[in-house]
Image (cartoon, rainbow, N blue to C red):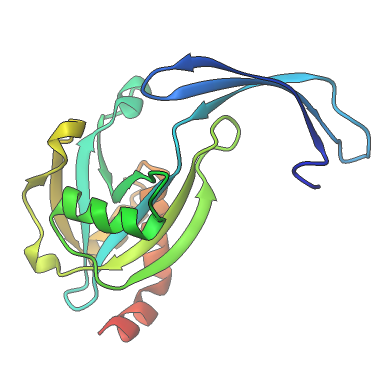
Length: 200
């Protein structure tokens, strides 16, 4: 189906504007049998688009991950300090590659070398417009550690370095609870040997 020809927007209203925005749509769309849906109402969470990177050291075979407080995890009744990869919102004048380089300096204090695209996906298309441009980036993990983050954004980020064997154990134990990190680590598990051969 075609995005523009097969969806009719009857109304779009911004119903909330705070740190993020929520828009309400009234619309109808073509059905698989060729007809049209009834008019439906949907809210869309607008938070911008993101870029994320898994910092990986192919020489030491180590991954750099971060730990920070997440209100969404807290609201869901889960432990609110999550193990994650580096990520940030893409500003209108930035490319995803520029974002991951900037965020890697801010969040883990490292400089990215080569970067490898992993995926560009919708994080929760049933109710949010956000897409995530996901990469793996080469770093020197020997320089990683400490507490980082942009103070103006209330970030308090603990940096940890994990040998690849520990990452495998995390995947097997299902201890990673956020999608972008899980996707990145699973991608590394599938592509690690080829990546190390190219990046050494």
